[in-house]
Length: 316
Image (cartoon, rainbow, N blue to C red; front, top):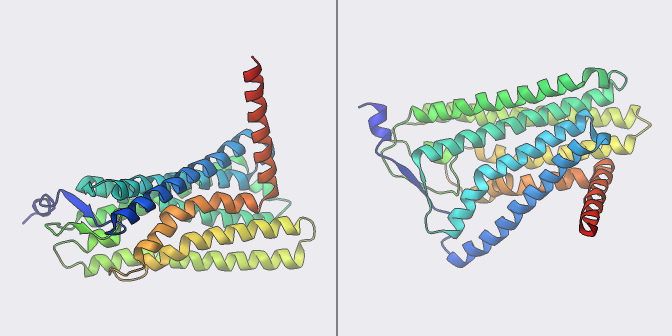
């Protein structure tokens, strides 16, 4: 029987959600709504600050603004559906809607991984080649880096969706989660998924683990260089690297937990998923802002400009 005939039998998936307790889900709805709003406010503030403040027109902040945009996008792929599942009795998503969510989730997630790797390269060049840094990391290079990260994310995502499209789905259609992701969807296929599991685990799990190890090694080298060879601006360099290591850990460790294991359901899966789909995007701007004096000063300048504008407008 053709694959299309199988896939046509499942027209939608049903989410289990976070809890069977309706009052607890209502509490989670308001909690995650606040987190989602804070994610937008924090990351959009970083983007506007970097664009409007000429003091921040440097490679590091250009890459940081790109990461902030990705955090907003990543949260928007999952958070609205999570809020709907928590608030509404309608806990379904269409088959094609599920595939669309998977595509954008892995597109943005893959781009984040490549972007974090590029930010590590940026710090390496800033510490090891300070005199040539601005020549190497010029505006054209920054745009090319961002383009490569987005291209890498799109290729990664297309691989995920292409593998799922080859599978027949004829029921059941219950997803024990609050969003569509590869592990939960694949195990609902009406066929042997052993080969697909190996392909997806190697593409997601081993890829994420390898990248994380490589990033940790690179940051260890950078920190060693800062400690032994950098005298001027040592505190600033250490603070920037510490912030990036924290963000990298928050993103990669939950991903490794989810994608390195076989496609089985564990009790902690939803909690870990919440960590990197909802919590991490709101923590990233806080981490970078609190540990970066230039960013804090730039945000203060932006707030003062906005207040002066409204004061003048009110007088008129």
